[in-house]
Length: 128
Image (cartoon, rainbow, N blue to C red):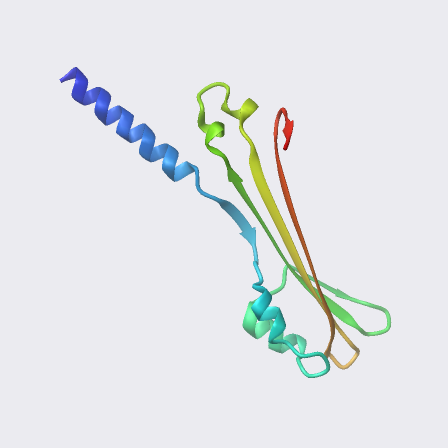
């Protein structure tokens, strides 16, 4: 009976670790193919919002032009993060951030797009 309890406990820990080892993400990730479907001088802010949803950021310039941005961030820990006691010290996390900006003229038509993507990997004792 003791062996069965140990096996069940071990399986429970393995399942819990597997569930916790997944990605954490937030924001609105925009696929490059989606950006490519929007045409300068034709696409409006409303067109983009209807496809991508509400932006994470919106700004208006004094000249009447405007911009919207969609930002996302995800983080994925490596297996070492789950080693009891020392995992947080020796493990690493890979963080990816992406920002896609759309700029509009005074009439609300798309004039420019830009994308910025960053990947960083590190932990408490340093990065790669």
